Length: 111
Image (cartoon, rainbow, N blue to C red):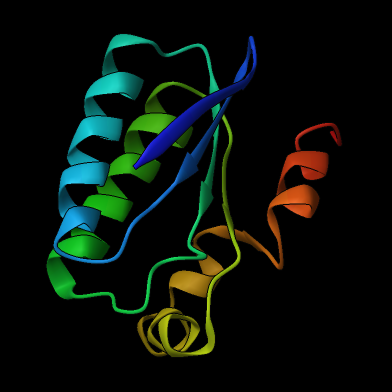
């Protein structure tokens, strides 16, 4: 996983496919729990598969980031197969999703 400090208030995270995906989310969860002052943009560009464990970790990340920390969480560049999982599970209604990283980053500037 590549975590880039896009700015002093934004983390840009390039997720990898499983099995690295799980480790990536675990590391990110630790970061957002210890540093509650940053918005997060997740790029799914390299993710081709999403399982129930991954979904649970994404929901936990959302709860910590959005509900507890009152920060933003944007998901970007989701491929067709993974997007199908989002649609079937209703995750498309829970997460803010953007076509690409640039649009996700730009959305942080909007109220």
